[in-house]
Length: 80
Length: 191
Image 1: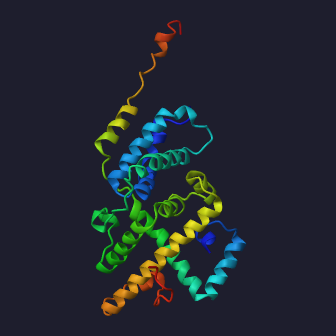
Image 2: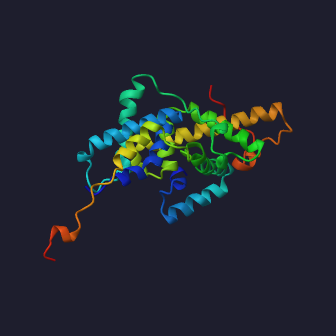
Image 3: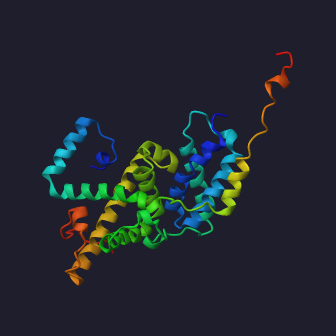
């Protein structure tokens, strides 16, 4: 069943497991919980839109400094 | 190199999530992200084109966590609390908040090696094979840890549900029943 929840089964295999789940209340119960849990994970671990800590932001700012612009084409080849 | 700073930056959200699953608190996770990016920049020449950047970064993060955080006993449990969540993710009503608090509390008690797999597979969408590569454990271990983590959470959350039901029978007893289709938990609780 875990393979079903994690999308690891072929269509036929998934249909087979879904059928088993429909026929077994205990399995159905567990499957509902697994799906619910996966739905909750983003709410638990989403990094949110909090700003980055200053040290990390400084690192990214440092990395994002744009490179020196290329010389204009005309300057590189005055004959063009 | 094919990958750029923008590609690294694009992975920060995933790194923060994975970092929280390992280290617990947001502050510790952000420290981990910082260390990971610094090491990634240092070692970028070792990155193999064609490899998924995210997996490479996850692997670095995990190694740092194991090398440093665990050695210095900085491993913390997830200290996320509902009140600490962004408002758009905060459950709207009290019952939902209770259910959510239970999950937060139980997630915090999971071993990090279980919690990280829930995040890698359930949230980040890694295949079992990719999760095995990041965590350095065999495929069967990924599978069994996921199974154990999910079933521990199921038992614990339902156990609290039953306890609450006994002490507060009118307490809507958790429309959690709607969530999980729960009847009384027939399985024994873990000690």
